[in-house]
Image: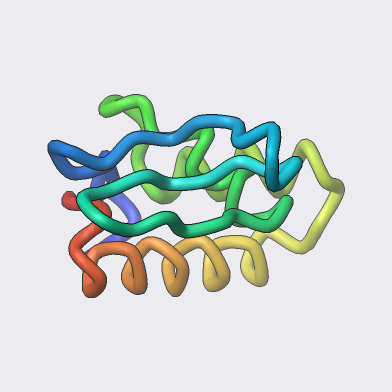
Length: 89
């Protein structure tokens, strides 16, 4: 995985708002993952075109945060999603 990698949700995984939980979730076969605000901000950028670097840059600007810190956080989160089989690159 590198900054030019383009993350996408894997086939069968979808993101939606769950009114019961009052939060965005990732839905997969027999599992629901509740996303906090930061996770939702990252996953919302998965469009099949934006790279990890582009997602990180966008979020750093949106939240006026340190670009290096955001890049590290986005990369770690994407890596976790890939390891759990929820996303692919």
